[in-house]
Image (tube, rainbow, N blue to C red; front, side, top):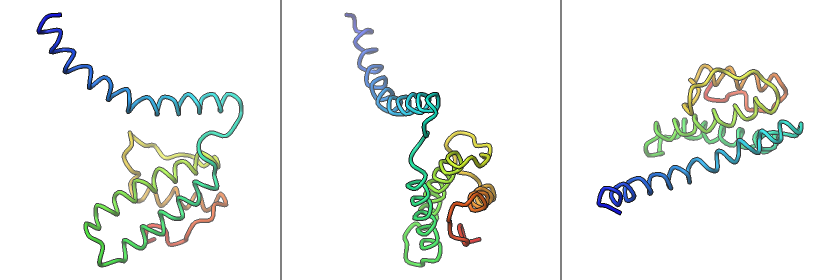
Length: 134
């Protein structure tokens, strides 16, 4: 093996292994969800767990929003809003609420997230009325 081959092996192999380690769990989840969907079974986590996660995240968002002692509060709020977006989208899929258009993994804009939370409440999901400070 020449120097060029060794150089390619040293640079390409770690990136390929890391990429596979990141992509493999996602690929396996998609395959599992596809098989469940074809079998008519539930897709995603149980609705009870998703709703509990969503309520917990909304409560934490409210606590951070009103707190004056949390360091790097804006970053924490953005991270919570991203997690709330994911949980709300999971809940919407589970109960059949129409999903807003989302590009990539970016969190939903606050207005769209409020509308989605309101639609989830209307569908019967028990969520705090003051979610996201509204």
